[in-house]
Image (cartoon, rainbow, N blue to C red):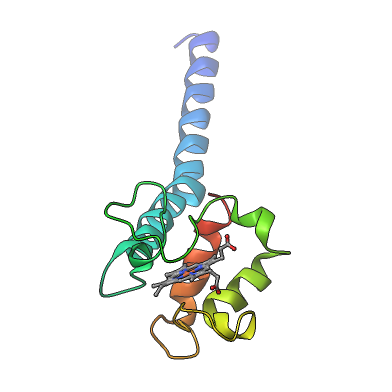
Length: 121
Ligand code: HEC
């Protein structure tokens, strides 16, 4: 085998490996997390956030609360958004929004997933 061909093959092999590693490390988990977060937000037996909020890609949304968009501009940081979803009544004692964390409607992990998702929409 000529040297040039060998070199080309190794470069090809190396780039394929890097591509596979990149897919395993980042893209897949991100896609999965997005899908899981959407499921938590949209499912009636999970967050059921659509009962009160318009959320992009969600169907048959209610209008009791504001549309969930530009969320990163409305909260100081993710921690504050998390606190809001955990127990909105600490921000507004008369809120209609259920305290998803305090009342264990969603688990801490589920809330983390939706916080990360909402931060980007
Ligand atoms: C029963 C109705 C109801 C449900 C269900 C509900 N919310 Fe809310 N939400 C509200 C209301 C009403 C507000 C407006 C602020 C207030 O009254 O406290 C609000 C405000 C918000 C805000 C602040 C938005 C802004 O623009 O200031 C976020 C974020 C939010 N809700 C997330 C969620 C998420 C995530 C879920 C599902 C896990 C959810 N809400 C489910 C009623 C609801």
